[in-house]
Length: 161
Ligand SMILES: CC(C)(COP(=O)(O)OP(=O)(O)OC[C@H]1O[C@@H](n2cnc3c(N)ncnc32)[C@H](O)[C@@H]1OP(=O)(O)O)[C@@H](O)C(=O)NCCC(=O)NCCS
Image (tube, rainbow, N blue to C red; front, top):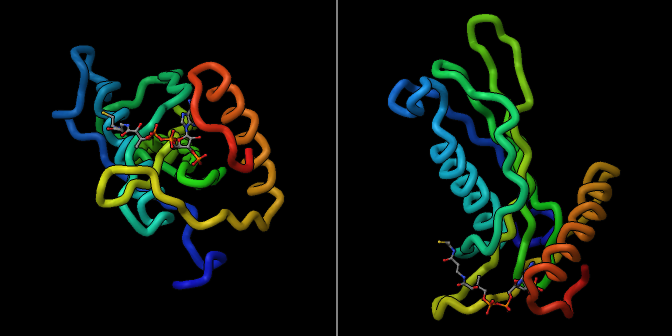
């Protein structure tokens, strides 16, 4: 897979919620979901970059609905935007009741991941090839989020967003 256009820019990870992952109330512990989302963002961005990546920021994690023990959660991740060394990974979480087969969209969030070299310094990643209308929409929305992040928290701004 040497061509940029062949690089996988999406990833799906699933997990069954076991009782040891519950909070004091008996539903999935929010901290476990954050941990899982971070792993998903790492896997998606690291494969895209072809090297190690670290988490620079996480925006907008709302726990709109509880996720219950015995449900299956599926995290759909995609690289929405690529700058020079950074990537925005969008993750949508679907919880499924395996007995009734009903599915709920419980969370969407956005991670900014940075590719790093052996010295821990940011290193360039392949440019993103945007092909479909959905990818185009995600790219444009990611550009707007990146501009907000940079204006709020600062950072190097010379890249494509
Ligand atoms: C991630 C890290 C290597 C970046 O180092 P840095 O010296 O800040 O790097 P730069 O200023 O060159 O920025 C790197 C990229 O992040 C982007 N960035 C920086 N601040 C940003 C912000 N507020 N919003 C969005 N992007 C930002 C830059 O635009 C740049 O992206 P680009 O190359 O695509 O344009 C460094 O901050 C780090 O090591 N952080 C800790 C990571 C970590 O341990 N995470 C786990 C949490 S416990």
